[in-house]
Image (cartoon, rainbow, N blue to C red; front, side, top):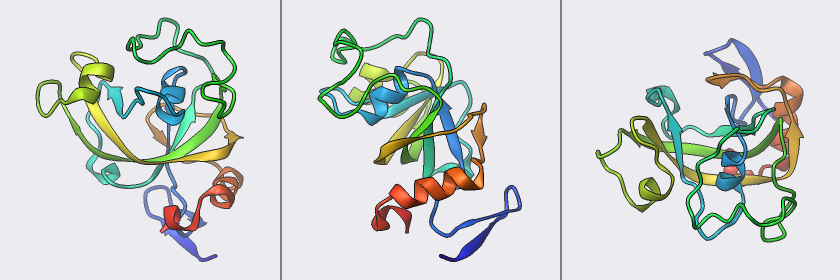
Length: 169
């Protein structure tokens, strides 16, 4: 593995491994990562997606505390027993890296909304379009932060070990 310099934070990293993570509260993190009839492919944020993160792989992290009053579309059945959704893995895991994804674009409501925005988009916030989702087989414990953040080297190495080769190039 080749070490590459991360110019944003001046830390060495493993080539091809995402160097940034974004923390998302449960059950929204599961709605992105778990297979369902209505997968979440829009992340709602009060701030626009920084241009340097458009199309760049990032890690999706579940927050240490769940959303107190989640707003979920009817098609996403949170009423299933809290445990497994489609038999993939336990729901509601907190404080873990769950997946790698890219944010393909963002827009404000009304400017390019589609069926994903109707199901998952909130009013008066930016909609970040999620693409290239690669769930991790085993979630990796990590302490999150607000905004984009840099996971420790041991967490990045654990992610690298789980990502398929094509996802890290």
